[in-house]
Image (cartoon, rainbow, N blue to C red; front, side, top):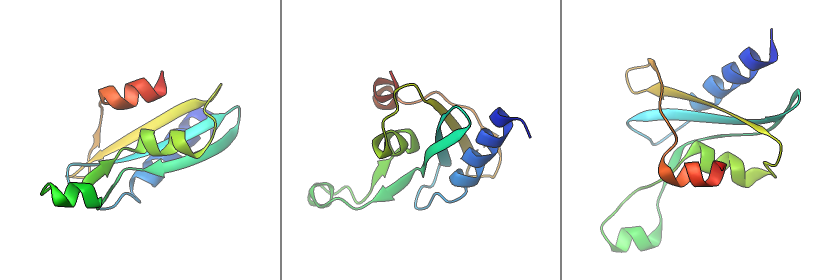
Length: 102
């Protein structure tokens, strides 16, 4: 299997591990050369400050999570999105993740 296909399939696998997110499951894989450096999926978590404001959930984006796991310099980011109905979807990173990626 060619590396790009292997990395994208890994991103799909990681997206399927996502939990607590209703709209879409997102998986991110950070690679350098032929090595996978880190993987992460999007998830929701309770944050006390948000609970006080009436917000019960806070979403952590897969891109944000994977970039915090290791040094992304010179690495390639692979992202897969699985919609709530199970189909594959395309999207651009949100403005916050775009800043993290740049």
